[in-house]
Length: 351
Ligand code: NAD
Ligand code: IPM
Ligand code: MN
Image 1 (cartoon, rainbow, N blue to C red):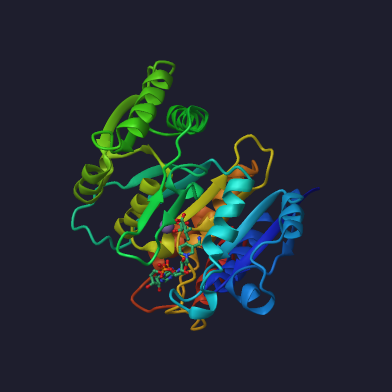
Image 2 (image 1 turned 90 degrees about the vertical axis):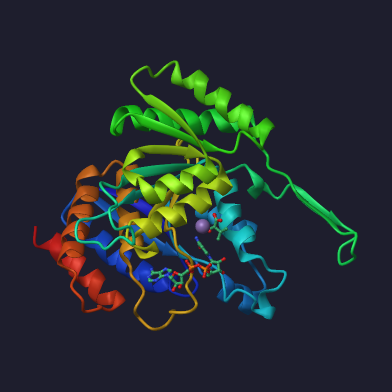
C-alpha cells in the first residue's frame, strides 16, 4: 500500500467548508484501493495572520515541501478589511506557494456538464482546458511606485516573460493537446500591443508547433478570445496563455460552464521536483461563508485532477463519473455543502 502525504490548506471563508467535502470524496474514491492519503493540516490564511501576524513562514514552506501534493481551499479575507491592510495574503501565501514550488502550469479545465444551466442560450459542447502560465507575467512583483500619493505618482507593474518560462509551458500545452485532447491549440495574447512579450510567445508557439504536425494551431488576441468564449466556446480545446490573461479567462470560462462553484484547477510542477497544488478556481467567498451553502463541486473536481496527477486514473474517473451523475440529478432544491459532498461520496461508494 502506497502512502501519499497530502498537505491540506483549508484557508479562509468557504475554503474549510469545501475542503471537508473534497476530503470526504477522496476517502471514498481511494477506499479499498492500494493508495492511502495521509493529510496534514496547515492553518494558513487571513485567520492565521490575524492571530499570529504570520502569512507563510519559511518553516511552513519547508514542511509543505516535504509532502507529495497539496490541497488548498481558498485564502483571503473580506476585501477591504482594514486589519488585513499590508498583509497581502494572496501574494504572500498563494502566489508564494505557486512561485516557490515552481507551479509553472496552472491547469484549468472547463466542461459544461449535462444538466447544467449555462448563461449562454446555445453553448454547444464546452470542453476545453486553459493552460495558464503560473510563475511569470505581471504576477512576479517586478514593479514599484514613486511619488506615491502625489498627483505625480508613477506606478509600474512589469510583466516578466522569459524564453525558458514560455517555452516550458508551451511545450506542456502541445503535449497535452496532442496526447490527451482534440489536437487543437489556441495561443491567446495581445501581440498587437504587447509586442515584446507577444513576439516571444508567438515564436515559442511556432517553434514547438513544428514538432507537432498533428496539432492545429490558432491565435487570438485576448479581447477577441472573450467574444468567442461567449459566442462559440466549442471552438476551443487547449488554450495556452500568460498568467494574467489566464486568470481573467478562467473566471469567464467558469461562468459560461455553469458557475465558478464548478471550476477546478491544478497548479502543476510537471518536473515533480515540488509538490503540485490543487484548488478550486474560486476564492473564499466572504459573502456566503459560514452559511453551509457553498458549492463544493469545484473542490471535489480538483481532487480528480490531484488523483490524475498522481497516476490514479481509475479513482479520478470514479470522482468525475459521480460528479457528472450528481450534477445531472440536481433539481431546483438547493442542497447544503455537506449534502452535495455526501451524495457524491455515496455514489462512489455504491459503485
Ligand atoms: P470569490 O470567488 O471568493 O467570490 C466571487 C462570487 O462567487 C461571490 O459571490 C461568491 O459567493 C461566489 N462563489 C465563489 N465560490 C463559490 C462556491 N463554491 N459556491 C457558490 N458560490 C461561490 O471572489 P472574490 O469575492 O473576488 O474574492 C474573495 C476573497 O478570496 C478575496 O480575498 C480574494 O483575494 C480571494 N481569492 C482567493 C483565491 C484563492 O485562494 N485561490 C481565488 C480568488 C480569490
Ligand atoms: C486565482 C486567484 C488568484 C490569481 C489571486 C487570489 C492571487 O484569482 O487563483 O485565480 O490571480 O491567480
Ligand atoms: Mn482568479
